[in-house]
Each structure stands twice: as structure tokens, then as C-alpha cells.
Image (cartoon, rainbow, N blue to C red; front, side, top):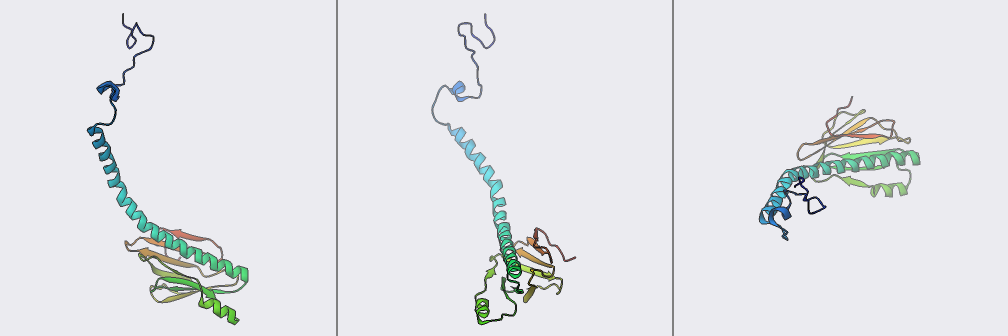
Length: 191
């Protein structure tokens, strides 16, 4: 008498896994050519979908990295201004894609020497300043822009627009009185 999957001579149940290799082909070692082809096909399909996204993320990451550098420099200037109780100038060269800072009205020869070796950030080759809008000046797309930071770290509300070769835009919004700087993945105008 049979009891379904149980054999009366054995106390253990005989469970069949219909998709196991041991059941279909016996207990063989290694992989078949069909299994290897299917695995290679799955890897190829997953790479076909992920590589274009990875390429785009590299370009966007260069834009994000450049915006982080600009934000870090501006935060450094505002902090230095409030700690040293001295006004600073942020100098942006839109044509050469550079941003730097210096103390406003150097009082001694030491300050003049420090101005000559001021830190400068150059944007990545694929990233450029699209324009700068400030509360005290109109929108500028070329030339040099000078932003004044007072001794308390305050400055006019300003928006930097960075773009890359594929026209992705990043807006960096500087608050006049708060130390917060916000970055947006779209073009934002000055209100």
C-alpha cells in the first residue's frame, strides 16, 4: 500500500524537487553549457540597462562635485568673516570658471601677501558657471563678479547657476542672513 510520497519500506519521505539537477540528470558535477549561456545572457541584459545610467551619473556627479566645492568655499569665507570680524570678497571669474576669495581692504603687508596666495577653485572641465544673480547686481553671464561678505558673515541673496555639457543645471542659493546654502537640481530665479 502506497502513502503518497511515502514508501512503506522507508520511514523518511521521498521528496522530489523537479527542478534540481540531481533529479533530472543524476548526481553530476559542474554546469551545463545551457546554464552558462543563460547566466551570461542575464549578466549582459543587466549591464545593458545599467551602463547608460552609470555614464549619466558620472556627468551629474561632476556637476554635484563642483557645486559642493563652491558651497564649501562660500561657507569657509562666511565663517572666516565672522570669526575674524573682517569683511571678505568672493571673486568669481565666469569666463575662466574660477572662484576665489580675499580679505576686503588689506591693512598690512602680511594681508597683501595672503591675498596673492588666496585659495582658488577651478570647476571641472565639463562644468561651467551659467550665470550669477545677486540682490545688488543684475544677472551676469560673463566677466567677473565680486560678492561682498561683511564681518558678520552676511551677504546679499545670491544664486549661482552651474551647468554641464549636457545642459543639466544646478542652482546654489545663498541666504543673506542664515548660514544655510541650498542646492537645487533645476534652474531657480531670484525672487
